[in-house]
Every structure is written in structure tokens, then in C-alpha cells.
Amino acid sequence: MAKEKYDSKAKEPEDAEMLGNSWSDGEDSLLREHFPFSTDDELIETMSRSINSIKGRAYRLGLKKHWSFVQKVHKQNAKKRWTSEKSKRQPGKKNYKINSSAKAGKF
Image 1 (tube, rainbow, N blue to C red):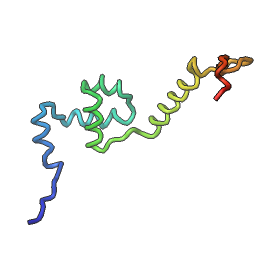
Image 2: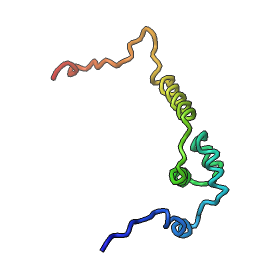
Image 3: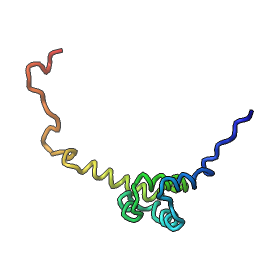
Image 4: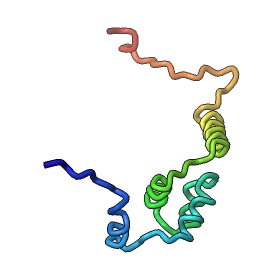
């Protein structure tokens, strides 16, 4: 007896109906338009759905973020990391704490 091959796409419409919030063609086209260049917060506001729902649908549609958008976000995050108060170096001051306890040098 041969095993039948499972086709996940054949089951998708039933599953969507069972969950109740199926995606319309209009929502799919809106997602295709906005997903490559929008942040998560912008997508949530535009689509009125959870970010997990949006990312899951984008994955099923084969959508990805555009490389220029990803590059811009990485640069912004790098600036945040290196300009935060904790990471600012102060000239003329040692940027580490010295343990002055007597136990510091003993092993």
C-alpha cells in the first residue's frame, strides 16, 4: 500500500474557513504592495491583523523584505546601539569599574 502524498495547498481553503479570518484577494494585493518596504508596526496598522498573521501570509505568498529596506533598518539599529547612553565613551575617564575589595586579586 503506497502512502498518499500530502498536499498542504489543497487543505488551505478549508483551514482558512475553519479559522474564520480568511484573506481576501484585496488584502493579498495590499500585502504584496506594502510588505517589502514597511515596518511591522506599519503593517499592523495598515492590515488590521496581528504581526504573526501578516508574516505567515507573507511567507505563504513568497514575499520578502526588499534588500534596501533591510539595509536601512540595520543601519538605524546600529546607530541606536552605538549612540545609546550606556555605550557613549567619555574622554579622559576609564570606562570600566575597578573592584576595590580585598578579595579582587585573590583566587
